Amino acid sequence: MSDYVLAQETPTVRTYRNGSALKIELNRPEALNAFNGALARELQQELTAAAQDDEIRAVMLTGAGRAFSSGADLMSFQDTEDPVPVTENGRPDLRKTLHDRYHPIIETLRSMPKPVVSAVNGPCVGVGLGIALAGDLVVAHESAYFLLAFVNIGLVPDGGSSLFVPARIGAARAAEMAMLGEKVPAAQALEWGLVNRVHDDASFMPEAERLLERLATGPTRSYAGTKRQLNAHAMHSLTAQLALEADIQQEMADTADFIEGGMSFAQKRPPAFSGR
Image (cartoon, rainbow, N blue to C red; front, side):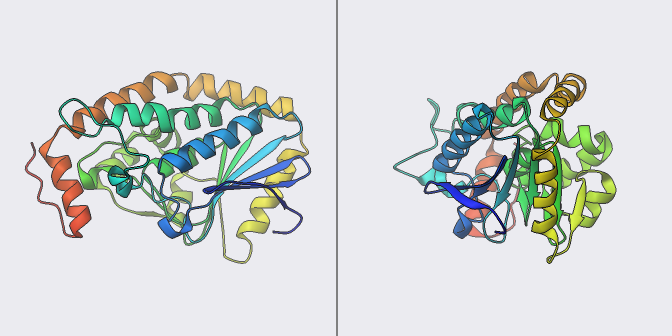
């Protein structure tokens, strides 16, 4: 990893330092960096530490292996050691899960007074897409794709994606991504404005690191001021939008279509949605 040295390692996250530049790597490659409780907590811990460390002036978020993140780990619904909470009627408490696991990550990325580069090295799906787009600049590997997969299991966009996606590409294309649930390849994502840059295999990480290091040696307070301006313009409703996403997602958890979506995913078959 060029001049980056391992600074911290937890079971699901690694961080690397090069002077004032910090790389945070999601490290569940065997699960395509799908988010379970541990990954969400450990990522939030590293982001909070980075936000509070004045010696760190720019942050990169990327994934180990061949994916950035495949989204929420649906197998974690069955995790007995770190389970997804359930409501009184026995349905997954997605509102609480979003509030506890994911909203702190999103809000820390947006409020951090230093620039964040999301280096999307592969598939970027579901809540992983929301987390990537919470960064200030998004660079993608040419083989990466972006997918709002929620509709495919009867859910709605969350992780801030109902705000970040239309802010970047407009309502029409956001509706297409959210309602059709189709992959958007990196080249198309660049054309639409979903990402800032796309690089091939040989140049992806060197170029991403070059961008990170440029930001880490630039006018940090200027970047922070710009970020505050952009937050006030396009992201001023972030907290309210995250709450709205969580409320509507909980409504979806009580539908027959969500149950069918989850069963069809587990059984690796097309869903048969009833509209209920």
